[in-house]
Length: 326
Image 1: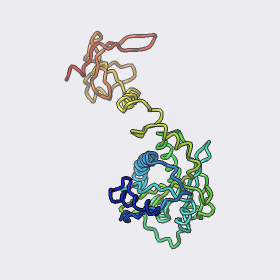
Image 2 (image 1 turned 180 degrees about the horizontal axis):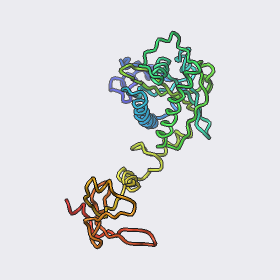
Image 3 (image 1 turned 135 degrees about the horizontal axis):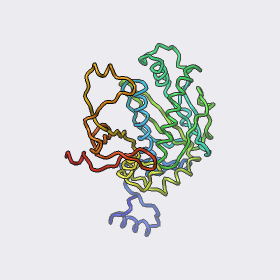
Image 4 (image 1 turned 30 degrees about the vertical axis):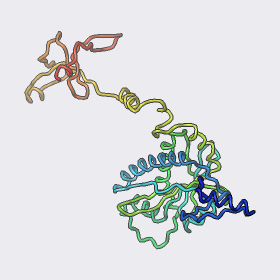
């Protein structure tokens, strides 16, 4: 029924009231009816889902860059969907055999599943072992040797997750074990809600699927922090309250640069160079009382005079050369 009744509907309602009828028949709307399951309330709000998407888009960028350098081929990773479903529904969506790695967040009762498409897993194994990702393996069962090879990729995934989630809290994602069967990778009860984050991994123009499955009920403490914080941009916690300019400046101030003092120059013949012995003296073109050039990253930056400061050899800056050349 519309929120505001038309005059015709009001008159019909009054006539029905006088005649003892209590129902009001309104023409049906063409709008699609969307069912709502009261047993599965949405634990994650739209704002929280938006933040989670931003976090995992950061993860996608970091992990794809790693795969590009590791596999020496073009790799693109995109977040395709974030769904809240029953764990039983997720179990039915996983194939058999599967390539599953269960993980947990240290010091927290939060468990999850990393699901790699078996074709993606075998492609990664083949490329890591020097192939081109077109192996001719007949079965899709992941062997113990292939599991060890995949551990390199999985550990990197956990590391990139740690970095991406720093915008909310310093979380420690830790791999537990490998499981080829979803029935043995139990992270919650069948009737509980889970958060499934799906990725499309494109390796050399070939698309594959990868999923994260989190138990939502144990995620409440982290979700609460998302509600109490504003995430205009995804930035590590330690940088909270600072601008991008300040962050870059702080890193630049800590950057080390090579500094070289040039005391003078001299020209000698190759014959004299070959005749040099220990104790010989090379006469420089510069005088003792003249300023010496101080080079920073092989650029003539300062001029100064040598001396002693606190029993250490030092040079006193007398003028800047770099600015004078501008």
